[in-house]
Image (cartoon, rainbow, N blue to C red; front, top):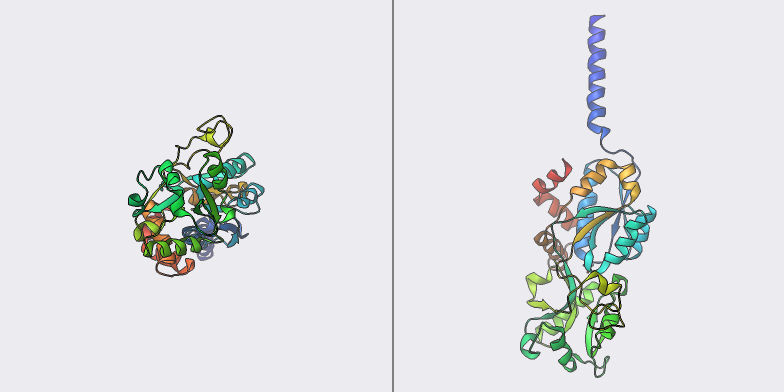
Length: 315
Ligand code: TMO
């Protein structure tokens, strides 16, 4: 009788400990849908977060989306998590998504910038750089067969939600945007020009692997203010919005669906703590763009080398 009681008690205790350890995660076996985009740091970070969630016991699914449509998906609860929300290119759609039910999961330590960028050797070719007026005065040097007498600005893929053609028009610049289809083309164009010290001005951002490999600077446009995107009267051109640059010290946030917090609260708490720095993000991009690793392998390597960092996020 006594023995039976002891066994029963210890079995119950065992059960209590067991369910206690697992009660937190996973709250649901339904997969958490992690958004992937088409640039390399995002792919690495999305995989890092996905693998860590799996380690915590969650099921995850990677769902490719573009930088604008993803916000509708987050607001609707069709997708659950985005690890890189860049202020410079996503601010407007992100704010709309939060107003429609998506959740701001906080900012990374990283400070970001996305804008026109040129190799440093052009400072001698176009005196007055990085000022945008000096660039504009130098437009003829950037002309190509495709752009005629106008300078060519090598722009980002269309889905990155920039307004560069509008900016060129608003500032009356003698430039034409020629967008690439994918990020790799930006770097191929840069490499080709850089090797021959030829003029090129292209879309770039930081943190990125570029800063470890190429010397260059962002063009300084009229300083960003929120009104620039909404009030035509603001800025140099009284009849147009977008007559300014992107934020020079932008945020990098994380965003989630409303159901993320409801269905998997411990996962949401973890994701709020996820925090990458500028050097970590630049290194993540370099593993893929310079070393040629897959985003999955780069994520595994990052996890192996940064245990103290991610363990702190789990507590
Ligand atoms: C959002 N991005 C980093 C590609 O500019």
